[in-house]
Length: 317
Ligand code: 8YV
Image 1 (tube, rainbow, N blue to C red):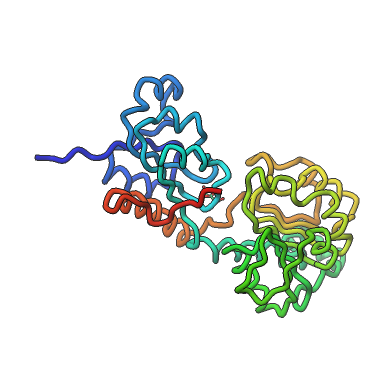
Image 2 (image 1 turned 90 degrees about the vertical axis):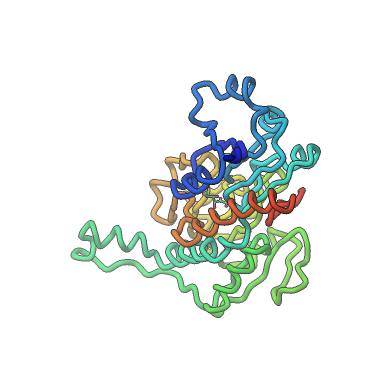
């Protein structure tokens, strides 16, 4: 007798290797491939017992409602800003996600951006390629070692950024809703005060309505003309229009950005500036980390079936 595989609705595309492993264990339907996803959900939504999504795709209350038999959602990513956790909790739907396994790679990109924008590495690369070195000397850059680093959000990723920074003999302070008792860094209750103190400000807090626009025009003003901003969290945390103006007017020294308000669209004005380094939301994008995230997506599902709970349950925020 062959056992029926559990029915899984996959909301968006995932890594091909993860899709193959999902298909081996489950009967997977890809919502993104349906000609009319709304009509498909209305006709067949109740067939699925599990849903698989990712941080950028998420799952909202309407979609959860269209999947009345779903008991577990497994998401590829640590960000929960596009998952309606309250709606899932009301329905008793378990939500698995993939924290921790990406901390190192995300912190590495934070430091890549920080070093790159301060030492002007990408700009210097462009200079060499266009033959600039044959004409003139490249301008001086800004030292990183020994400087003051402000971290916005002292969660798992913020701490990992701080570890990197201690190797550069940086002085570290942080801003967080809560004082974090098990870190040796000073807590700054006021974000503008942290920005005023810092020479580098790294944004590592969670996205979502509670943190929207946290890096405001006032915070950028406080960071000042010698200050650099790095964002590896979510575009929503930064007032992007204010950031563009501050960069254009040199009211801050530069920015390293992996995330944007309307990905994959990056404001045209940023493309024209040499004092910014832009990466296309790739902080977790290494073979090793994406593999670990994929493993955890599967482990969360397996664990739910075996024990009735996912291995990494998203907190209800
Ligand atoms: C994405 C991320 O998951 O984990 C997160 O919250 O933002 C990223 O790691 C990644 O782009 C894959 O979709």
